[in-house]
Image (tube, rainbow, N blue to C red; front, side):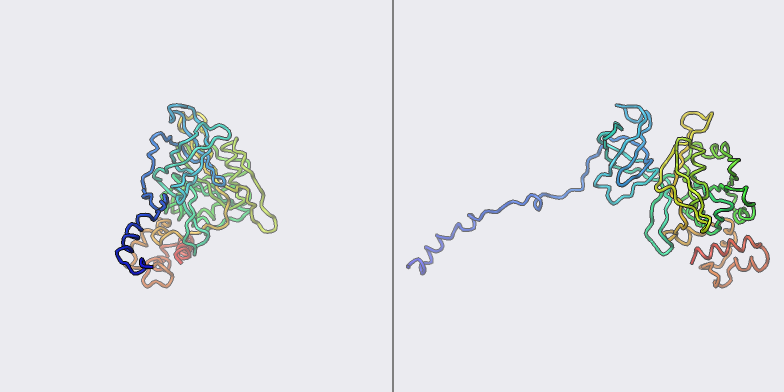
Length: 351
């Protein structure tokens, strides 16, 4: 038992103990992290025309792919590095992988180009989470019926605010003018100088609308049952968008478009490349503006801009704001009944 008390022997016995410990490597823990990503220099560019449960329809224009210069629609998935980035109708994207467009093929979206415009909405005015609807749209065609269902001034105000906030030119198409005179309703927006198209089941101003759509991307919005899908089918006969009817008891339209889709609208006699793009969106009964700032709302009321600019600094433009020029204009008669209604709409949105 001498080894229990012999310090020299003890030191020799355990001198190399640490060297005999086996250290197991952990590749995941020891591998350095990097943010470098492949450049995907071989990627080709296309436009997103449809979104369906994590799969994207991407139109590859003719001449973009040197290996296959034909125009084709490609099904793509989102790359992992883009999992936090929304991809919507109208996005210009870069795709790699199998871009043949053949049945069963799948490519991958690896980049999203910068967007020129972005149309958004929220679930309601208290919801700050924005829902991206369409990217790179040039125009918004607001489809509203003169009757059945009854037109809603406040809803059109919301569409206009969203359009101006996104930097998109608004247009109005009022349908079913055979059922009611549309002019009293349109009077609410006359000061905005927004182009207006009037139509009935017998007379659709298709040539006039096609001329406005040519060479641009136009998103169609409207209350369910106003005839939006019917108009799109007239402009794009091969669209076959489902149409519905208005419930006679509730006066509400039935949802027919369940998802957004981009459709090419050819203009007879136009040169190649002058076709417009129509983006059909699901009909909605509300349009939240929770993501829009007060300045964005004010931009939607260009007819009141001169009065708003004359208000005292820091004016909230609410109905209890002191010395607000909007109240003075109503009291003095500068604003008529239609103008006063516009002020009421503005204040409701600001609240």
